[in-house]
Amino acid sequence: MAIQVSSISETYAKDVFTDRGSFCGKVEDVECDLKRFKIRSLVIRAIKGSYLSKMLGDKKGVVIPFPMVQAVGDIILIKHISPPAAAEDSTPLPDSPDAAAE
Image 1 (tube, one colour):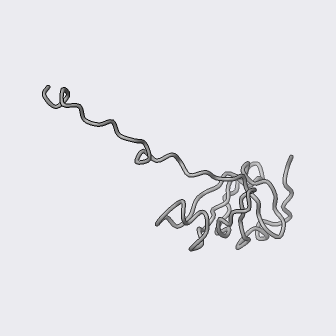
Image 2: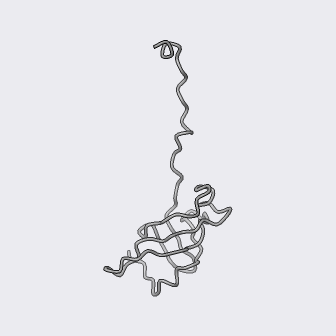
Image 3: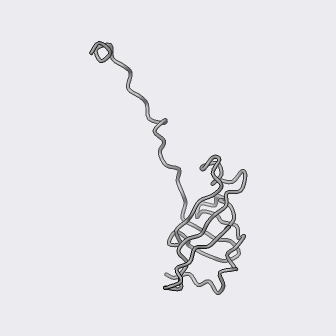
C-alpha cells in the first residue's frame, strides 16, 4: 500500500509516533530518490524526554527507512522500534578456578 504525500514540505516538523503510541520526535529532513520520485527515508530528531531520546542516549536522531512509515497525516506513524539487546544485559559466566590456572 503506497502512502500518498502531495508535498515533501508537508512532512517537515511533524510529530512522529510509533504504532504503539510512543512519541519519537519530529521530522528534521527527508531523503528522496529523485530518479524514481520516491521518498527513501525520514530523519527523525529525538526530542528530549521522548521514547527515541531515551533509547538513543546522547545521539541527536535516527534515519527511518520510508517502508517503516505506516501513515502520514496530522502526525507520522511508524512501526514500533525496539532497542537492541545490549551485551551488558547478558549474565557473564563466573571465572572458574581451573581456567585461571591454565
